[in-house]
Structure formats: structure tokens, C-alpha cells
Length: 492
Ligand code: AMP
Ligand code: MG
Image (cartoon, rainbow, N blue to C red; front, side):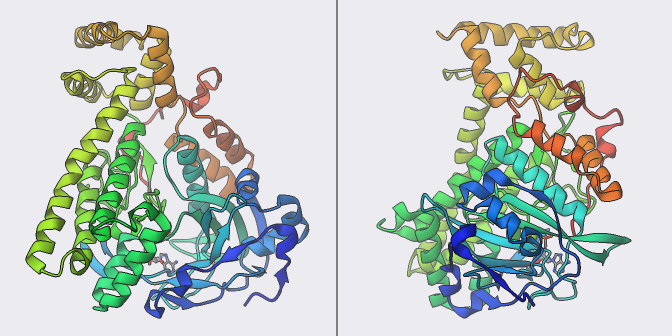
């Protein structure tokens, strides 16, 4: 159990506990487990400052002990959150088995962010697990979540990774580590599934009201706030998934417990970015059926949202049949919402300012061409954005030339210049993504040799993904080996 406290006045902690005021079935008190040799290996100074924390004071007062869970910030009331979830289609009760919420940091501008320690030891929901996490997966989450943030995609953030000095036993002995995660909240579709499974309408209503107040305050006065809430959650997810697809991101485990009501990307496990364009791309070793393949993500998001809608039925209408009708209409609206964001995003990727009926076909034909020729997704858009010729073997191909002519003609029908079009493209087509082999290289140096410099360099490149002036070819080249050979493993 943590044995001391540090002062909030100097370090800047302002922890609130609104979630803990929900009915007891949503949380259980717990304490981070003390570890033998805390050692801070990555710290996000910019994020700390934006949270109102003082990095220098934190460092002086022992940030390693703090971010490993040995010392609690003043005002912390650690809890584990209860939730359920559909994992690969099957319902299970879960809860924070290895994550502990310290509280909600109120920032200098009045925003509220959960501060959570992931891998901080046993909780009442640990089931058979050890409550711990290994260094590699925690660094992976740090790296990819910060890359997603720099890409402008809603995501939880990473404040720190600390070694515990203790091993965790997985397939082998690994170094234990704790990640400090920062999130708009950790309320998941699975939190609603948990509430519904308790058959406690008052608790469900309390959770929905809380979520509306925290994430969708404009809806509080709506005529049917719960229906509006469902629609608003769908809207944010439609936008989020479209953004994932537009940078080639594959979450890997889109179970309902890994879908946040805030609309942030959450729970980075076996996620990865696609190299060659192929909608069937799957990296996760546990996703044998391709349930969460790149191109399946919109459908799976809709499936998850249908589970959310089911939990909300008692709140949507007193008459069950009418509630089901309202829920069905809402679920069906996902497709149009998603299509809207997909088209808007793809127009930007192609430098289009106006709308034409054939735009969707123009995009689909490029994607089809990329798939047929195993073209790299990121680099194809980057080359088009930079106005640099595509590799010669590609440019010579008649089908690409004819697509390129159509695209040029399409661009000439808008009043904006080619330069303006390129500027739009360069703001939406990243020049740098976390290439799988670069991520692995950084993690291997850190895990095997305690060399964090490779990771820091990669973080530096990924902090400016749209920097077309940067000359960093080593970070842009796709892996030499076939992309499909890459496999990611769950961080447990
Ligand atoms: P995840 O795959 O990280 O989304 O986790 C799914 C569920 O398993 C969550 O309830 C986690 O809290 C739990 N879990 C994952 N790893 C561990 C662990 N090492 N010990 C206890 N629970 C865990
Ligand atoms: Mg999870």
C-alpha cells in the first residue's frame, strides 16, 4: 500500500471524484500495490503542463514513486471501475483488473481528466490475473496514443511509464511497468452493459445522466436526452472510426469494453497501422477470424453501439415496442453518419474543396488500385500530397495514369489552386505514422537494452506527422518483409 503523500499545492494536483459519487455498484475502493524499485523511464512534460502539473516539482518530490503507484498524489481516492463487455461477440463481466483510477484532474482551464494507473497491481476485478503490465506493451500504448494525438485523432493520452523493478510472468519473465493514462473518462459501452446486467434502473439512469453531464452537457435539456445521447455517441464514434480508417489505423480489439463513451480511442493493445492497402488487414494474433480487420471497423463500431442502445431501452421510452423502434432507427443512422465523415475526410485526402457526385467512386478507384498493386497506403497519399511522382513502376501503369487524369480533371473543376489543394492534402495525409517495424525497433531497444533513445527519437518524429519539410526517410519506408507477416500480441 502507498505509504506517503506529496503536496498538491506545489505539484499542481487538483483531484476531484465525480465518478465515485455514482452508485456503489460502479466502483470499488482499492490501492495500488507497492513495488520494490520504481524507475521513471518516459514522462510527458507537455501533457503534464497542460494538466496543470508542475513537472519540476514532481521530479523533485519523487515522480518515479508516484507513477509506479508507491506514493499517492494528495487528494487521490483510488478506485477500480466495474464494467462488463462483449469480447469477440461474447458477453462477460470484467472491470478494471489492472487499472486504478486515482481521480479526475481539474486543469487550469477547468477541464476534467481521469488519471489512471495501468498495471498498478491487484484490484477486486483482477480475477485470475496479476494486475500487472509489462514494459513493452505500456511503452507501445504510450507511443501509439501520443502518435494518434499528434495526428489529431481523439484519444486517451499517456503521461508516464515507470518500471516497477519487479518481473511479470507472461510467456517469459518480463520487466513490470505502470502506465499513467489520461482520459476524458474511462466510461465504456461495457459500463452501460454492466449497469443493464444489474437490472437496477436507477443505477442505469444515474450512469446515463452522469455521462450526459460529463460528455454531452448540451443534451441535458433535450426533450428525450437519452435518445439524443445515443445519437451523439454514434456521431462521435462515426467520426472517430472514419479518422482511424483515414490514417490506416487498426485498433485490434474493438470489444465493447474498449469503446469509450467520450469518443476517444481507448485501450491500445495489439493495434497497428496498415502498410500496403488491404481492407482485410489484421495484425492481432488473437483475431483469427478477422472480426476487427481494417475494413470491418465501421461495422463493428455499429455492432457495439447496438449493444449500447439495448442497454438504454428502458430510458428511451416507457413503452418497450416504441423504445425498440427508436433504438433501431438510431442504430441504422450510423451508416449515414459514418459515410458523411468518410467522404469529408477522403475529400481532404484528395485535396477536394467541393462536392461532386462521383467523388466516392474516385476515391474507391484509387483504393482499389492500391489494393491491386499492394501500394503503401500512407506513402501513396503522401506522394500525391507532395506532388512528387509515384515510384516509376507505379506511375507507368496505365490504370494509375488514367485515375490520375480523372483526379487532375476533378481538381481543375474547383476554384482553388493546385497549391491550395496540396496544402489541404498535406494537412490531412500524414508524412509519418508509427511504422510497425520502427515501433518494434524502439520497443526492442528499450526492453532488451534499457536504451530509450530510439523511442524518444521516434516520439519526436511522430509528434509532427504532417511535417512535409522533415527529411527523415528512415521513418517513412515500409518494412522490407511482407506486411502481413507482422503480428501483434495482447498486452496482458
Ligand atoms: P484488455 O484486453 O486490456 O482490454 O483487458 C480486458 C480485461 O482483462 C479487463 O477487465 C482488464 O482489466 C483485464 N486484465 C487484463 N490484463 C490483466 C492482468 N494482468 N491482471 C488482471 N486483469 C487483467
Ligand atoms: Mg480493455
